[in-house]
Image 1 (cartoon, rainbow, N blue to C red):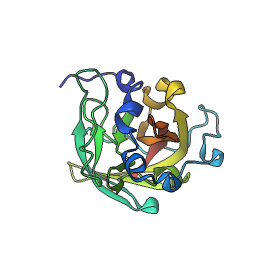
Image 2 (image 1 turned 135 degrees about the vertical axis):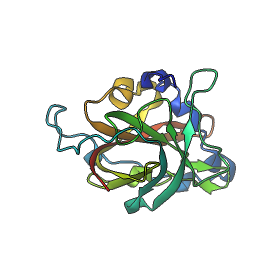
Image 3 (image 1 turned 120 degrees about the vertical axis):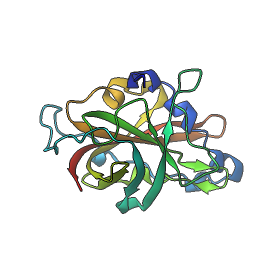
Image 4 (image 1 turned 90 degrees about the vertical axis):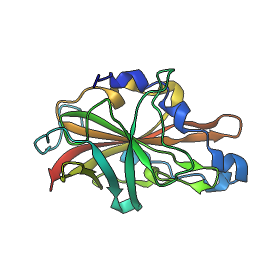
Length: 207
Protein backbone atom coordinates (compact mmCIF):
# COMPACT_ATOMS: atom_id res chain seq x y z
CA UNK A 1 0.00 0.00 0.00
CA UNK A 2 1.29 3.42 -0.89
CA UNK A 3 1.93 5.63 2.14
CA UNK A 4 0.98 9.30 1.90
CA UNK A 5 2.61 12.09 3.84
CA UNK A 6 0.51 13.08 6.85
CA UNK A 7 1.04 16.72 5.98
CA UNK A 8 -1.08 16.25 2.85
CA UNK A 9 -4.22 16.20 4.97
CA UNK A 10 -3.37 18.91 7.50
CA UNK A 11 -4.97 21.92 5.89
CA UNK A 12 -8.37 20.37 5.26
CA UNK A 13 -9.15 18.14 8.24
CA UNK A 14 -10.96 20.98 10.01
CA UNK A 15 -13.24 21.57 7.02
CA UNK A 16 -14.19 17.91 6.76
CA UNK A 17 -15.07 17.44 10.42
CA UNK A 18 -16.42 20.76 11.57
CA UNK A 19 -19.83 21.63 10.19
CA UNK A 20 -21.41 21.77 13.68
CA UNK A 21 -24.61 20.19 12.39
CA UNK A 22 -26.25 19.74 15.78
CA UNK A 23 -25.66 23.30 16.97
CA UNK A 24 -26.75 24.66 13.60
CA UNK A 25 -30.00 22.73 13.32
CA UNK A 26 -31.06 22.76 16.98
CA UNK A 27 -29.99 26.26 18.00
CA UNK A 28 -28.03 24.59 20.82
CA UNK A 29 -25.11 27.03 20.95
CA UNK A 30 -25.38 26.98 24.74
CA UNK A 31 -24.40 23.32 24.65
CA UNK A 32 -21.17 23.66 22.70
CA UNK A 33 -18.59 20.95 23.42
CA UNK A 34 -15.93 21.59 26.09
CA UNK A 35 -12.70 23.24 24.97
CA UNK A 36 -9.23 22.62 26.45
CA UNK A 37 -7.84 25.16 28.88
CA UNK A 38 -4.40 26.70 28.60
CA UNK A 39 -3.29 24.42 31.45
CA UNK A 40 -3.62 21.41 29.14
CA UNK A 41 -1.30 22.80 26.47
CA UNK A 42 2.32 21.70 25.96
CA UNK A 43 4.59 22.91 28.75
CA UNK A 44 7.92 21.08 28.36
CA UNK A 45 10.43 21.79 25.62
CA UNK A 46 10.31 19.29 22.77
CA UNK A 47 13.74 17.90 23.68
CA UNK A 48 12.52 16.89 27.16
CA UNK A 49 10.17 14.15 26.05
CA UNK A 50 8.92 11.77 28.76
CA UNK A 51 9.44 8.02 28.74
CA UNK A 52 8.02 6.13 25.78
CA UNK A 53 7.53 2.39 25.52
CA UNK A 54 9.27 0.48 22.72
CA UNK A 55 7.49 0.69 19.38
CA UNK A 56 5.15 -2.11 18.38
CA UNK A 57 5.15 -3.78 14.96
CA UNK A 58 2.59 -2.40 12.49
CA UNK A 59 -0.97 -3.64 13.01
CA UNK A 60 -4.26 -1.99 12.03
CA UNK A 61 -6.36 -0.69 14.95
CA UNK A 62 -9.95 -1.79 15.52
CA UNK A 63 -11.12 0.06 18.63
CA UNK A 64 -10.32 3.15 20.72
CA UNK A 65 -11.12 3.79 24.38
CA UNK A 66 -10.61 6.96 26.42
CA UNK A 67 -12.03 5.98 29.82
CA UNK A 68 -11.86 9.42 31.47
CA UNK A 69 -14.26 10.93 28.91
CA UNK A 70 -16.30 7.76 28.30
CA UNK A 71 -15.16 7.09 24.74
CA UNK A 72 -15.49 3.45 23.66
CA UNK A 73 -15.73 3.23 19.90
CA UNK A 74 -14.86 1.07 16.91
CA UNK A 75 -12.40 2.39 14.34
CA UNK A 76 -12.71 2.36 10.57
CA UNK A 77 -9.99 3.03 8.03
CA UNK A 78 -9.92 6.51 6.49
CA UNK A 79 -8.35 7.47 3.20
CA UNK A 80 -8.14 10.69 1.24
CA UNK A 81 -10.96 12.24 -0.76
CA UNK A 82 -10.39 13.14 -4.43
CA UNK A 83 -9.54 16.69 -3.31
CA UNK A 84 -6.78 15.36 -1.03
CA UNK A 85 -8.52 15.88 2.30
CA UNK A 86 -8.85 13.25 5.01
CA UNK A 87 -12.11 11.37 4.64
CA UNK A 88 -14.34 11.06 7.71
CA UNK A 89 -16.59 8.39 9.22
CA UNK A 90 -20.28 8.50 8.22
CA UNK A 91 -21.87 11.33 10.20
CA UNK A 92 -24.96 9.28 11.05
CA UNK A 93 -22.85 6.78 13.03
CA UNK A 94 -22.17 8.94 16.07
CA UNK A 95 -20.09 6.37 17.98
CA UNK A 96 -17.57 5.64 15.22
CA UNK A 97 -14.07 7.05 14.81
CA UNK A 98 -11.52 6.55 12.06
CA UNK A 99 -7.78 6.26 11.58
CA UNK A 100 -5.63 7.33 8.64
CA UNK A 101 -4.85 3.91 7.19
CA UNK A 102 -2.21 5.07 4.70
CA UNK A 103 -0.12 6.43 7.56
CA UNK A 104 1.38 5.06 10.78
CA UNK A 105 -0.59 2.43 12.70
CA UNK A 106 -1.10 3.29 16.39
CA UNK A 107 1.79 1.88 18.41
CA UNK A 108 4.45 1.76 15.73
CA UNK A 109 7.14 4.42 15.47
CA UNK A 110 5.81 7.65 14.02
CA UNK A 111 2.66 9.72 14.25
CA UNK A 112 -0.66 7.88 14.02
CA UNK A 113 -3.86 9.82 13.39
CA UNK A 114 -7.35 9.13 14.75
CA UNK A 115 -10.23 11.46 13.89
CA UNK A 116 -13.95 11.64 14.55
CA UNK A 117 -16.96 13.92 14.64
CA UNK A 118 -17.80 16.11 17.61
CA UNK A 119 -21.51 16.05 16.75
CA UNK A 120 -24.01 15.30 14.02
CA UNK A 121 -27.52 16.55 13.27
CA UNK A 122 -28.93 14.43 16.10
CA UNK A 123 -26.59 15.49 18.91
CA UNK A 124 -23.14 14.79 20.39
CA UNK A 125 -20.88 12.32 18.59
CA UNK A 126 -17.88 10.19 19.53
CA UNK A 127 -15.40 12.98 20.39
CA UNK A 128 -17.85 15.53 21.84
CA UNK A 129 -15.93 15.59 25.16
CA UNK A 130 -12.42 15.46 23.70
CA UNK A 131 -11.72 19.04 24.78
CA UNK A 132 -12.30 18.02 28.42
CA UNK A 133 -9.46 15.47 28.33
CA UNK A 134 -6.60 16.11 30.78
CA UNK A 135 -2.87 15.57 30.61
CA UNK A 136 -1.88 12.16 31.91
CA UNK A 137 -5.11 10.49 30.79
CA UNK A 138 -4.96 7.14 29.03
CA UNK A 139 -5.95 6.39 25.45
CA UNK A 140 -6.17 2.68 24.63
CA UNK A 141 -6.18 1.31 21.09
CA UNK A 142 -7.02 -2.34 20.41
CA UNK A 143 -5.05 -3.66 17.45
CA UNK A 144 -5.83 -6.47 15.03
CA UNK A 145 -2.85 -8.51 16.19
CA UNK A 146 -4.53 -8.90 19.60
CA UNK A 147 -2.44 -6.31 21.43
CA UNK A 148 -3.61 -3.08 23.04
CA UNK A 149 -1.45 0.02 22.66
CA UNK A 150 -1.67 2.29 25.70
CA UNK A 151 -0.93 5.99 25.20
CA UNK A 152 -0.56 8.77 27.77
CA UNK A 153 -1.85 12.25 26.93
CA UNK A 154 0.87 14.91 26.79
CA UNK A 155 -1.30 17.88 25.83
CA UNK A 156 -4.72 18.91 24.56
CA UNK A 157 -4.77 22.02 22.40
CA UNK A 158 -7.20 23.93 20.22
CA UNK A 159 -6.26 25.69 16.99
CA UNK A 160 -8.02 28.06 14.66
CA UNK A 161 -8.27 26.50 11.21
CA UNK A 162 -6.39 29.45 9.71
CA UNK A 163 -3.40 28.81 12.00
CA UNK A 164 -3.38 25.01 12.10
CA UNK A 165 0.22 23.88 12.88
CA UNK A 166 0.64 21.21 10.22
CA UNK A 167 4.13 20.05 11.16
CA UNK A 168 3.44 19.98 14.91
CA UNK A 169 0.33 17.85 14.50
CA UNK A 170 1.16 15.65 11.52
CA UNK A 171 4.95 15.68 11.38
CA UNK A 172 7.08 12.57 11.75
CA UNK A 173 8.04 11.44 15.27
CA UNK A 174 11.00 9.42 16.51
CA UNK A 175 8.84 7.55 19.00
CA UNK A 176 5.31 6.07 18.80
CA UNK A 177 2.87 8.96 19.04
CA UNK A 178 -0.86 9.45 18.55
CA UNK A 179 -3.00 12.42 17.58
CA UNK A 180 -6.75 12.38 18.23
CA UNK A 181 -8.56 15.12 16.34
CA UNK A 182 -12.04 16.60 16.24
CA UNK A 183 -13.47 20.04 15.67
CA UNK A 184 -13.57 22.84 18.18
CA UNK A 185 -12.68 26.43 18.82
CA UNK A 186 -15.20 29.16 18.15
CA UNK A 187 -18.51 28.42 16.46
CA UNK A 188 -20.37 30.35 13.80
CA UNK A 189 -23.83 29.53 12.45
CA UNK A 190 -22.56 30.56 9.02
CA UNK A 191 -19.44 28.37 8.89
CA UNK A 192 -19.61 25.87 11.77
CA UNK A 193 -16.65 25.28 14.09
CA UNK A 194 -13.66 27.49 13.52
CA UNK A 195 -10.88 25.00 14.21
CA UNK A 196 -9.76 21.74 15.78
CA UNK A 197 -9.16 20.18 19.16
CA UNK A 198 -6.02 18.02 19.01
CA UNK A 199 -4.85 15.50 21.60
CA UNK A 200 -1.12 14.73 21.66
CA UNK A 201 -0.18 11.39 23.22
CA UNK A 202 2.72 8.94 23.22
CA UNK A 203 2.99 5.19 23.76
CA UNK A 204 3.69 4.22 27.36
CA UNK A 205 2.75 0.56 27.39
CA UNK A 206 1.02 -2.37 25.74
CA UNK A 207 -0.72 -5.54 26.74
